[in-house]
Image (cartoon, rainbow, N blue to C red; front, side):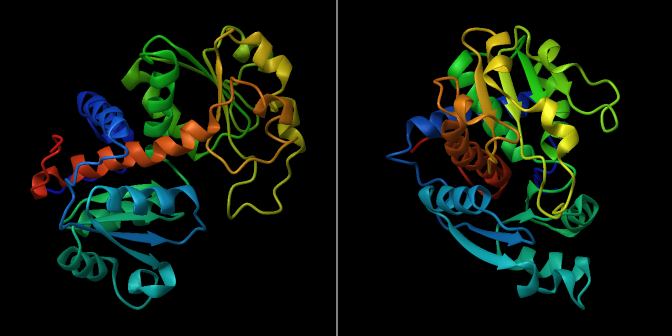
Length: 290
């Protein structure tokens, strides 16, 4: 059975914590990365535009000595005349692991069920586990163990929010969601959510494929200096990007020391290297440093 990485709550928390520990170690070795993926190839499949996912996976694989093949959905038969099962079986004979960034989570899950190599969820409309692993890595770097911390989410209720919901009971942190009540019934008022928070986090209000979506109802949930002032003095601000200033966040917040968005973006690289190493460990990868 291959080690897929599709949803955080599919994986034992001790394994997730060991992946994060390895991510910290790999970041410390960023200028002399161990060549633990030498001879391995990762296929990366996209049906959405990508900056951080594409670059972080490609650079991460190559830093650790591996190779990548980059494919758009139109380049292969995954959305064409060939069945999911046939495409999965053929790709499994060519590469050692597959990362997919696509809209339909059910299609991703079905595809993974037919693969004999690990499949990594690079993002679907339902979940974004690699992003949350990078976010937890960032929180631990800045604030220490995430257990017991208060994370306050502002804005839309989307794939990133839902993955934070998966992570909260696993890593024992408090998650408070401040969003319009028509999309999240148990939402907290913005200032209540921000009060004594360790982490303030948001995301774009209009994800890819949602162009034309109305945003007025989200404006009360914009992260402003007043929101940050209600949080703890050492609180950090996170956003997985791309950012739309004066929508989900005020430009003033982005200019404060609390803003850690670039550390967060870099940590996609290190978290995903550790995810790749775990997924491929049974394929002969030695995850210990050389």
